[in-house]
Structure formats: C-alpha cells, structure tokens
Image (cartoon, rainbow, N blue to C red; front, side):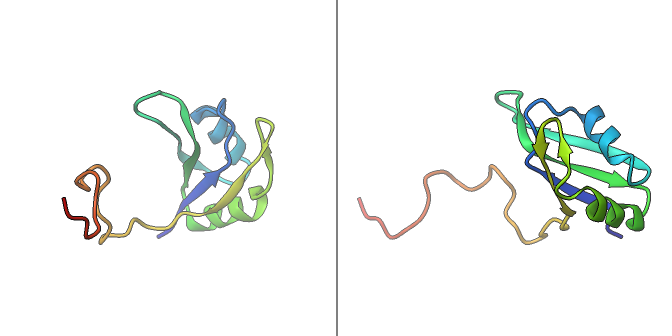
Length: 102
C-alpha cells in the first residue's frame, strides 16, 4: 500500500501544519512531515505526506504537483519504499574507499 507522497522544493518557512493544510485539498492527511536538519534545525527543503488511502495519495500527485506553496513551486510524487539493501546513514566508516596506499 503506497499512501505516502514525497514533496520537494519546499520553502524554508513551510511547516508541518502548512504542508498538511495544503495537501488536505486532495484527501485525508494522516501525517505531514517537513524534514529538518538535526544540526541546524532548519528545513531540508523536502518532506512527506501520508494519506488515508492510495487513491488520495495519487490524487495529491495529480492535483498538487507543480502547485505553489509558500511562494515556491513544489514537486509531488508517490514516495518510493526504503531500499532494504541500502546502508544505514551514518554507518559508512568515514573517508572511504579506493586503493590508496600510505
């Protein structure tokens, strides 16, 4: 079940509540999150919105992709599931790789 959409090109001033209100025109929003940088506390410029149904998520893509929110034209698409084979962030081991010899 894919009832989540990705939202890109968000304004730095967009809040979770503002994101939810904008997407409520497409269906029942169950969760809206603007992702924030842990170090600075500032928006990363993207987020996710979850809907009650897949049909509402698709309606949001159809209706709100390329719409304007807080003075910015936003990009909306169905969210892709996390890749179970992807390495977790932060556990990569530093300055990595190559065949460099010291």
